[in-house]
Length: 81
Figure 1 (cartoon, one colour):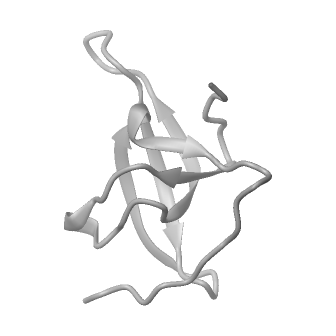
Figure 2 (cartoon, helix red, strand yellow):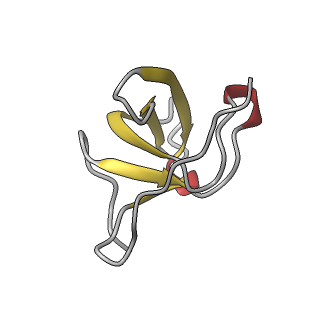
């Protein structure tokens, strides 16, 4: 498994409906957070629009994101809301 890196793009593996995000949406890793009780790390993602404007910043467990790979392509969807 490839690890998540600071300031690299990562894709969500699950929907985050409270932020209008869907699995496959891509954000930039802006912080990697240690769990206060020694549990799994968290990842803070900044998610941008196709034109580069910040949509939201969300924190999710590291297990809910994956680094991008060479055999993937970008896609565009309209964000509801």
